[in-house]
Length: 180
Image (cartoon, rainbow, N blue to C red; front, top):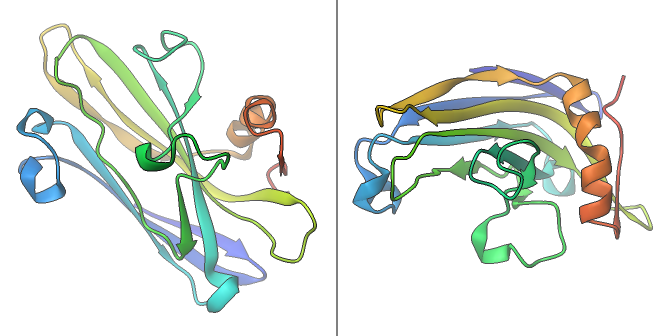
């Protein structure tokens, strides 16, 4: 799926691919990840240098998370899960990559909300400005089969609904509403 976005009057796009993992070793995963999804979102943006700095904010609602699937939790990259930043990935046109899996195949619903955002370099505060978002995930049925959820573009309201959680979780950051 290709999802367009606009930043500083420049057109960019995301190329989002969610596919079933057939060769877990090829993506650095254990063999138990076979059949689970992997998601890759590649940023294409003509800006250069600091104008191409973006970050990925990803939240997950899963029936095995702290709320048993009733709310979203942050899904930070595990190497930086204790870092006080909402970004899982950050850099020049950063690629989002995620390949969630479980050792056991108990019934489960796992849905991610993934947002490309940016932080102005000339502000005195750390602000997150959303640009575009999409949803993806997987379900494990009672029969233990894994079904991939289709990629869907998220509406501005989906980001705005996460704002109270983001503000509480990252009090040293501010989060803008989705631009009109």
